[in-house]
Length: 129
Image (cartoon, rainbow, N blue to C red; front, top):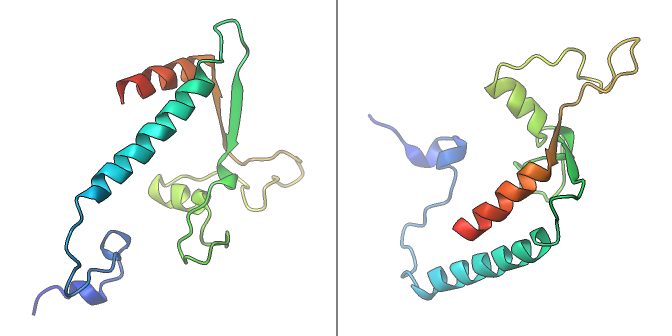
């Protein structure tokens, strides 16, 4: 009796755990933080170009985001973020399938827009990191 984790199909437990793991190499941590630091420096360089008088707007359509759940490097019908959000948030977006509502021609796909204040927050956050 008990829980057989190896045969359990839950996303958080789906990582393969080897029977005899390789010894841990501490330099891996240095490599990870080096890449993160480089990425933060690049982000800061770009964010510093945004001035307080600038008009900034980045729109992200949630239908463009996806997880590679089946690990085939392609966006399939089960990989989209929207079904996961609908399920997790018990979210009923009227007439979201197909993208346009009946007889309206309106695209019901949610979109998030980031503005100047978000850019300023992100710049401060990169300094914090």
